[in-house]
Amino acid sequence: MSVDFSKIFEPISIGGVTLKNRIMMSPMEVGMGESGGFVSERLIEYMKERAANDVAIIITGSIGVSPEGRGLATQLSCYDDKFIPGLKKLTDAVHEAGGKIGAQIYHAGRQASEQITGLQPIAPSPIPCPIMQGNPREMTEEDIRIVRQKFVDGAKRLEKAGFDIIEVHLAHGYLLHGFLSPFSNKRTDQYGGNLENRLRFPRQVVKSIIESVKVPVTIRISAEEFIEDGLHIDEVIEICRILEQDGIKAISVSAGSYGSLPWVIQPMMIERGFLVPYAEKIKNAVKIPVIVAGRINQPEMVAEIINSGKSDMVALGRPLITDPEFVRKIKEGKQDRIAKCIACNQRCIDNVFIGKHASCLINPRAGNEIDIVIQKAAVKKKVMVIGAGPAGMAAAKTCAERGHDVILVEAMRELGGKISLASAAPGKSEFALTGEYYTREVRALDNINIKTDVKADSDLIKKEAPDTLIIAAGSQPVIPPVEGIEGENVFTAEEIMLDKSFVPNKVVVVGGGLVGCDTALELASRGCEVTIVEMMPEIARDIGLIVKMVLLKELEEAQVKVITGKRLKKVTQEGIILEEEGKESQLAGDAVVLAVGYRSRNVESLKGIVKEEYVIGDAREVAKASDAIEEGFLIGLKV
Ligand SMILES: Cc1cc2nc3c(=O)[nH]c(=O)nc-3n(C[C@H](O)[C@H](O)[C@H](O)COP(=O)(O)O)c2cc1C
Ligand code: SF4
Image (cartoon, rainbow, N blue to C red; front, side, top):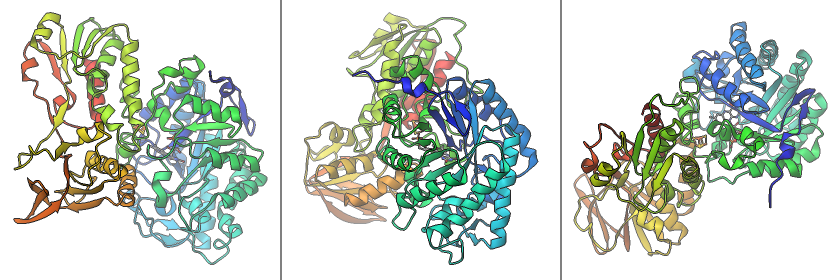
């Protein structure tokens, strides 16, 4: 049945501001500001590109109203007039590109970074944030008055800078949500206790802003905190009703707080569109527009939400990092060509957590719009790419887009390489979208000649005589050289993932990185008793914060045992022998699964034949899929 996308393009008004369609760019702190909180050219180019591709309204990442209330050095600020010119440049750029722009105004409360601000965080109650682990001070009534005024002053500056709406951040455990939530607000005065009291300060802030600016004021709120003694949907509905009476013009629905971080920026294990039922409940209680976000990465899902009236608008965050043309492609009937965010978090929020600007595993150009423009090559070349894994496909796609003629040679029948394997793990099926996207794109380009089931060798290279050779032949599992490793009870993680019928009783997984953890979960889901053995002091060291939190919880729930700090010494008929500081111990298992990493495939026989030659991806150095795609893309720009 064909999907009707037309309703997405019906305009909607938020407090008198007309939006040309129903898609908002969800607020995202992308680490692109200048240190100190100023707008940068990088941020302008990044937002301009999304606005130029028909996103109706972009909401900025959170903008700090006070120096002690900031979470990142690069986060925008509005606590001084000095920030206005940069912010004005940003709003002008988005307006010129045909979009509207809203400012998300916030104070991080106990979730501020003391390391960055050098100031003690303030909070409703002096309870450290479970993630930031700071030492917050309980706000006095005087603090409450001062911060309320800072919100007002900040909002006035944002209005002056040309923002079309002001979104007050009542979500994610930051200061105002911190007051709303019984999880972080333990006060016994008029600002704590029952809902009326917990709402008092956030309500004062919202009302004061409404009284002080002419632009519409909206809120973003966590519909559900997903913490037992946190803020739940019933109270949130009540809050929305009250704030609607006070004059807010729209409600943007999100989830979680730092105490439940995976619900704030949901990894792929969380169901697509999980917030839609919450948004629907809120919508049924109010008359103003409701906007829903969270793992909505399919154009058909956007249409279904809008068509069914469960929400008036959809806010897309990461999907618009991945594909800035998401909305335009729907408008032009090319929705099949959208690159879909897989909620891996690897290059967006994980980058921001380590002080880099956000980009994307699938789209390495994201965040680099200022530096990278894909241009036709000056001289057309014949390019041969060996290997159609992530690096090879990214290289082939970029070379072809730049006008080169490409031959893409793959030894397997299917394209995709290790990506297909990653998607076989429990809860990781979204990974398949990456392979699907690149496969579709390379197949759609007329100037790529794809040869599958073909093993490239020196004869083939000589026969094709390309101007440029890109070797992206990937990697193969490391087999540690220990006694018994050739035994029939030893398997690689790949073999386990590919043979779903394999169900031993007791399994030892050697290696506790991402592949080992995924394999352990897969085996546990088949009913096996699983132990992970890792020689380092902890498992999941190569995984970003949010995915790691979910994965560790899943391993615990699946009763997977974990042994760290011990090295595999020997494999026996009965299991394995481990060694720690010269002391040996035994671990029983019917099967031993190796997940101790990969090593580059030997490509020496392919080298030295073509003058312009590159070895990329795992074939050069084993790394993550995101590194491989980025490298392929960058080589594609260079050829
Ligand atoms: C890099 C990054 C930064 C974010 N920063 C903010 C923020 O500043 N304010 C906010 O309300 N939400 C923030 N979020 C949450 C998103 O707005 C969005 O709700 C979430 O990513 C789920 O939607 P999505 O699946 O469309 O990305 C951020 C998300 C990401 C990935
Ligand atoms: S890095 Fe992963 S989660 Fe982030 S935008 Fe790209 S695909 Fe989505």
